[in-house]
Image 1 (cartoon, helix red, strand yellow):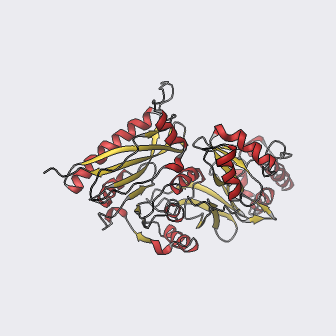
Image 2 (cartoon, rainbow, N blue to C red):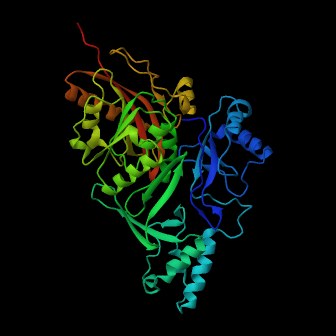
Length: 448
C-alpha cells in the first residue's frame, strides 16, 4: 500500500462530513494510539471507536485525512512494530458524549409527528417498522428491505419519504430488496426519493462511482480491500473473475502495484461503473475489461494471481482460474467462500505457531516472490489466524484438494498446492462466515 494514501470524505451534506476518517490497528495497540491522538488533538471525540469485522480497531480522527508523519510516528515510536492504515467509517456511530438524540430517535420523532398530522394513529407496529440501520452514500440513504412494510405506509404518499430524508439529513432515499437470482448480482433497489441512484464512495483513497439501484457495494469488505492493497504485486498480471465495479481490481492496481489486471464482469451496469472507476483513478491503461460469462474466457497461461471474489461460492470459476495460472511458475488463487460454522459443538480454534501469528498480525509484510524458470518458490508456510475456525480449515483443505485435481486435469501434469492464509472478511449471516483462502499453486518440476 502506498505511503501517502489520502482518504477523502464522501459527499458533504449541509457542510458536515457524512463519513469519518479512522486509523485502523490491532486491539493491543489501541490504547497507545488513542493516547497519542488525544495528545496531538487529533482524536475525534464525537464518534465511537469501532471494531472492524476482522477484529482490528478503528479510531476516528479529526479532519479529512491524517498526515503521513503521524502514521509514521504511530508505527515507529508510539507502538514500534505496529501496523496501521487509514480507512473510512461510512456510517459512524456518535459517541455517548455526542448523543443527544440518535438518528433513529430523531427519525421516530419526526415521522410520528408527520403521520399523526395526516390523521393516522401512531402505533407500536409502525414504530417497530421504522429502519434501525442503513447505508449512507453521500446524500443518498439506502434502507434495508425489512422496514416500511406495514400496509399503513402505502397510503401516506411520497411526502413520507421527504420526511424520512429530512430527519436523516439526506436528499435521496432508496430501499433495498432481495438480490436478483439472474446471476449478475443485480440488487433489487427501489429509488424512493431523487432522480437518480448514482453515488460516490471512497475507500482507502480509491474513488468508486456506481448506481446503487444497479450495482452492489459491500461496506463489510473494507478490511479485505485494505489487505489486498497491502500486498506487493509489482510486475504481476492478475485476473479478477468477478470484478463488479472494481472492488478488488482497483486496490490491486492503485496500491498493490499490479502490472496489469484482466477484469471479468457480465453485469452491464457494473461494467459501465468499472470502466468509469478505472478512468477516474488513473489506471485504465493497466486494465482490460472482459464483458460476458467468465467461463467462456479465452485467456490462459497468463496469471500470477486470480481473484475469485464471489459469494456464497466461486466454485464455478475454479476450472477457468486453474487455466489462467502461468504454466511455468503457477501463482496464487484468492478464493472467497461463505462457510457455515456449527454452534454448540465447542470446537477449539486451530493451534498456530508464533511465526504464523506474526504473519497474521502484520499483513502488510506479506510479499510475493516471483518464481523464475520453474524454481521452487520461497513460501511462507500456512498462515492461520489464532481465531481460525476448524470449519474454515476443513473447507480450505477440501478446496485445496479439489483445485489440485483441477490443475492436473487442465495442465496435464501434477501441481503442488499450499494454503498460505485464511482471512475472515465478515459474518454473512448467523453461523455463516465470509472468508478468503489464499492458495499457492505450483507446477511440479519435471522428472528426468
